[in-house]
Length: 276
Image (tube, rainbow, N blue to C red; front, top):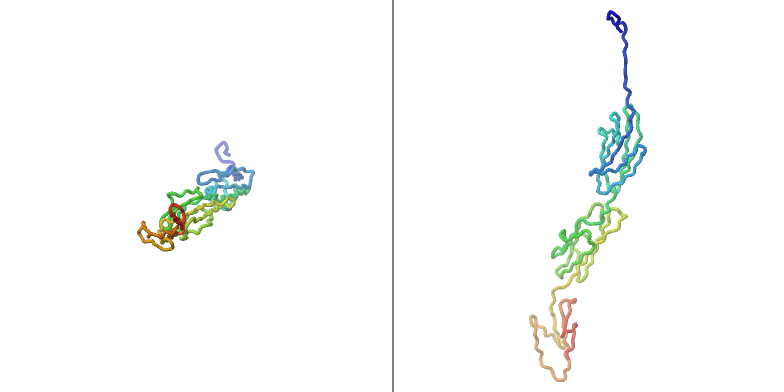
């Protein structure tokens, strides 16, 4: 204060102190995946959340929106940018907790997110290959992951078959032995591959493979007339000796190399035939 002559008579100090903010409110919180899909519908009054994300979601990002003077703590650790990322394992639950501390030190409520990445429900194979000692029966060109039945016919040169496949994550395979040469027998060979998804509530997907071995080569080993073998290799016409008048019938029979083959004598399907 100055008098009329301009002299300072009294001096007063005015001290103004701004109080620290007590705001520890969370205005909003988001939980998003790699494609920015939102999984959290935040309500400040709700402290606990149970969230399920699809199997294809491998990680989620948490972001908190708070007062600029407040500090966020995520998983007990101070967050510089109010954000955190979390990797997820299929079938397991990740518990994420966070709270906010106001500028004046007041601590807000703790929120908890129980995030479960669902198990894989895929019951189809990535690939299936079937190869015999003579060639490939099934590969990426003709494999259909949605098809549950395959049928092949091969000749007797195909003696072994090997099955190889690629699974999708979490699948369990039972049935046919893989990556081993399995013997093939004449006729029907039936194999099964059972695919159990990671999600055990799902039924198994069963793939049936039938490989039929059919002999393609056959030879005549014996041609018997009245018990005598007259067969000559490479000869297809035979002239028999004359028989006496008291012979009324001739027994003609044949022996072939393939027991699964068939013989017709005078148009009749039989190994032995009587000619009158």
